[in-house]
Length: 149
Image 1 (cartoon, rainbow, N blue to C red):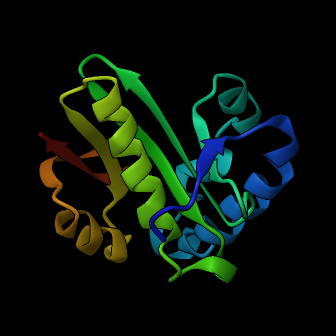
Image 2: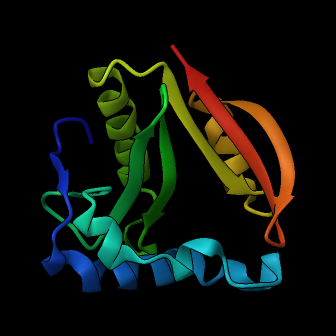
């Protein structure tokens, strides 16, 4: 996956992003007991704010939403379409987020995931993220992670 280009999403990518987020998160509705928060985000506004990043060669395969706040980059969402999972796209997007944080001389990356998303609970520690806290927010059981350098 290394060497693949990532770019800001554009308005032309919106339909692919909406399809991707539905494919990636809708299956968790039953597990969580409600619609996962990424399904209801305003991706049009996030694209306009230049917070959404996609793979250059396959923009509808996955995306990440991240933005700088304080001394950290906040990784809000990573989604990979079910047709493209297991190809390293999610890791590529996380690496891009971390690289942008370093470029901006931020001290690390913060993110959260739902406690019911077991794959994420296994993935983030392998990528060097430590649990910062666990709490219930808006009916969601969230696990907050941080990675500092």
